[in-house]
Image (tube, rainbow, N blue to C red; front, side, top):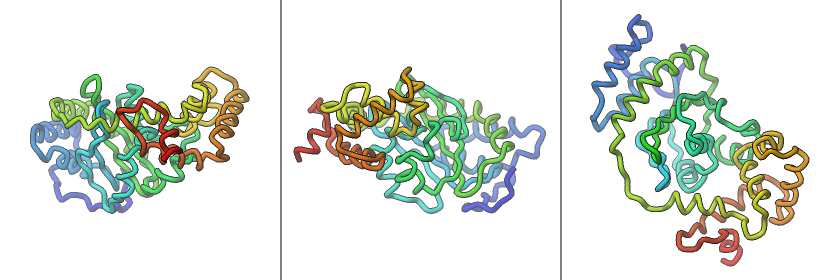
Length: 286
């Protein structure tokens, strides 16, 4: 377990510190069960985990196919509202956690297990993710039903989670997953169609000028895949992938991933449920 200082001081709940008990998993489960169906369940889960694990941020998000992500609970020492606004405004579409949800990858993951191979060199990481200050994350994604999932992010602002931290949290995931499903199985939210609009805009981005394969290649690029990784996913050679990428850049009149990233997010602002067309056209005709 980590012993370094954290942005948060540990809650003064000695009865929640189970990790030194031979029955700690059972005690953890019992404490979490007592918190079910309570409005402060998210806060209680945070407190139980915080008493046994050192971390700096804790966020619970609801993912659905009908709307943009919703923050169910968060514990962040220095909350960056701009970061949240950008994420909820469209950046979530290419985030590794949301991508895992869309693939149906449910379970417990250290963040490095779900990010694409070139994620830390991607424009998404450099221009957006890195501004969160997070150096490491543990992720839990719990399926609630066919279209809904709850994702939990536990983050560090410095250093990495130890193997003991990872092992302990992995042991707790089945208990947390069951509790989360029980707590939020009937959770509903108003359908504002924002997620559908943004997903459609992302899917149709540059469709008026690029071929389907060129669009797929740049989508993989924006998600953080290297040429080698994208080529493997698409079943093409690396040289062919690079040819598609070069062609797409030329048609979009851009020269870098940074320009591509900025163009995409400029176009997402033109997402429209009524118009099933390329948002790039709407952006250029503004």
